[in-house]
Length: 557
Image (cartoon, rainbow, N blue to C red):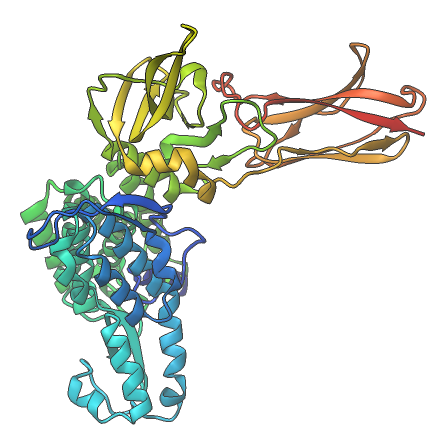
């Protein structure tokens, strides 16, 4: 196998392993499901014995505060009798993300024992009998980790903690079908790892079978909160199925497929040729044969264009998977989200989809889960007198979410009439740019639009303008939270523009405009300063993030 291909496969192997959380460090500052503190109704307990009407305040992010995986699991289990499946989903997935950082702590706790050769004679699987022979301090670390849903695999003189997805499947009965099935899918690899020391250690045909199971999951659960992660898992399976691993080549010699690999390809095409994986396998098999016939043989495998063409095919996988499997909650359909206040205020709240994909996906999922109602007696906030969540889609359409109101007429002793309006608990109004409108029940959206949006979209001061600008000295105007494509500044006096900056490109709301006022053209005094936004084409109606701002500044010598 060429060295270049071997290195690429090594990277793919690492990517694939990391997609499963068994040994992955945090992939970003976001978690897949970041839920603001929610006020939720406790429902029937899992046995259906009693109905409870008490409310509970909880945050799925509370898992992050746990001192250990054992404590995190105990925290999750404590909520099982209290929450409905969708709420437990959020906590379970937060628990899964917790392992990304905690696993390193467990590994470090065992480092001294690893270095001392404590585990030199262990084989897989690491059994309870093995653990019983460990020194007491090591035994405690391992036992607590197992209580935290870890399992241990033996390497060369070390043991490595991995997340035991099979143990997490014990919670399936309390979760949504999509999350329960996700745990089942991920348990396949944690029960029988596919890689060891850069080699594939399962029969080749089983790689294809795992790819088909990941594909089936994506087809059955398009609304899964782990949809994007399973797409990465599918890509890893297909990549390994086609090109193996750094120490496991699918080629017997030169360009000839190993008989086991060739049979695995043929069997999958025969049984599941109409599947996405089956169609790719047909294409890849035909490509291997065609390239072997068309390209002249070369002596140096490291410079064989045969392998370069195969890697080019592999490079198309991510795009083809993304094209084939599209979640209705894909954040890529959203450009940005912002809060629209009832009256102008000195701060802005904005969220950019490409930087906050998981949060935007979660917001779309909450919208989908909102329960439409007839809304008799309900109304939108009069004259827009409430905060609103504005979702701006890439196609230019928008959705607005506000708390729903109920209004009643009042009359005082003098016969004067008035209207008293109050928000209706856990009820929202949802309107889109086409004119469609509905009222819906959603405790999460009601909480989000009224208060907890700040956890995702903190208050930002939209601009920083110096109080005084000195003639012939450079100055800066700094902006935050803009939704415009470009911004510029103009300085005017008595409705006459005396200076205008260049248009500056905005980067995720941030921009810096620099300038110098020439004393030949500008006199000292008080001037009007206007920050003016140039919207993205097709988004001219978007006004969030202070598209236009007017203030004053003193110009001095």
